[in-house]
Amino acid sequence: MPLRIDVITIFPDYFAPLQLSLMGKAQQSGLVTIAIHDLREFTSDRHRSVDDTPYGGGAGMVMTPEPWGQAIDAVVTDQSTLIVPTPAGKLFSQPVAAELAHSTHLIFACGRYEGIDQRVVEYYRPRIDVRELSIGDYVLAGGDVATLAMIEASVRLVPGVLGNPESLVEESHQLPGVEYPSYTKPPTWRGLDVPEVLLSGHHDQIARWRAEQSTIRTTHNRPDLLPGS
Ligand SMILES: NC(=S)c1ccno1
Image (cartoon, rainbow, N blue to C red; front, side, top):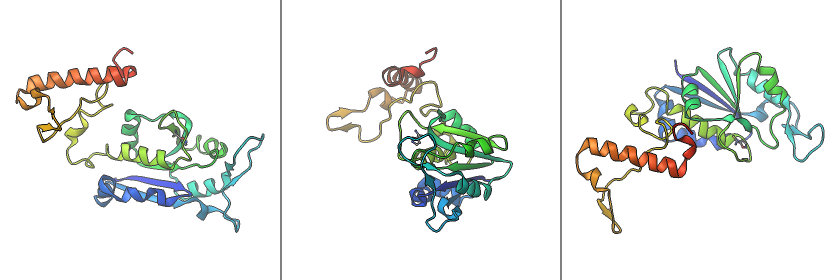
């Protein structure tokens, strides 16, 4: 049963990259199906409006609930997970990507402006799994880029999508901490040599060096990921 993904957005063209590379191959292989829906197709006024002023005042505009209800109803099943990218959401992570990779149906609601009327989340929450997710503590112009990131992080974990599943074992955020640094040919580049141990053929020494490098890198870049932190 392929993972089905429906993306609802006012900028369908943002998702053209999903036809390329690994994401494109995943769809061609039938492991994943991805459909992009223009929210404005679900409006009923001649201006195809999708936003209005916020109740309670404040800057910016809020996306009205009606088009969202029509659009989500057009694709939702009782197996759906509705994902709303928002800086106010729980933090998206590799474990969350792994959960989504094993889902049946994901619906991504890409908000713009000041976000989507909260009643959309409130309406679907008692009916299906609804997740407000953030890809980081920063604000984007909308949920589209966050959706692209979450789709790529999740789809690559769908069994069969990656040619060599071994490459999932040692990558950052799979193991405790971040990954060790990688090197390839040439052995010397602009006077910089590849660490000698990597050319030694001593697999135990290489494994030890990589574990040390992972700890050094994690301590420097992401001490919050160190065991016990
Ligand atoms: N940080 C996230 S997911 C976001 C969505 C819209 N703006 O920021």
